[in-house]
Image: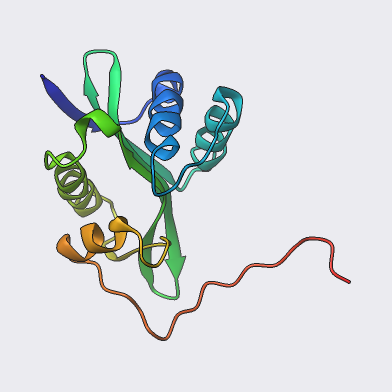
Amino acid sequence: MSLIFRTMQESDFPACANELIAAFRQAPWNEVWTYEQAYERIDEIMSARVSRGYVCMDGDQCISMLCGRLMTYQDKKQFWIDEFSVHPDAQRQGIGSRMLAFLREQLQQEPQAVHYMALNTERGFPSVAFYEKNGFVPVESDLCMAGHVKWP
């Protein structure tokens, strides 16, 4: 493998969509994404001026992708990770940790200092241990809430 970590380009979206499909098809997520759904999700996340995306490529194959948004909170900048995945064939090889290290390097080059990174993940999933190993901590005061659009 000859891995290259770099900024995501719109021309990477098809390879990223295929990587997302493969990554989340596996346990414990067991999600079924169509190519169109995966592509649209990446395109939506990457559509704002505050969007940032990064890929790990092996030739024309996307091995890992991470995309999110650089957001203002009072006088600080935060980076919210919206999607992050590693292809199942490349998991447990340190690529995810290398992607987060690359993200940190990229965020240090932003014109305004980025003080905080955040993401949502599922309790009890292996991703929790991965993120903790990479310096993330659960924020006990935060609570992710969801609701249906149509409310009784």
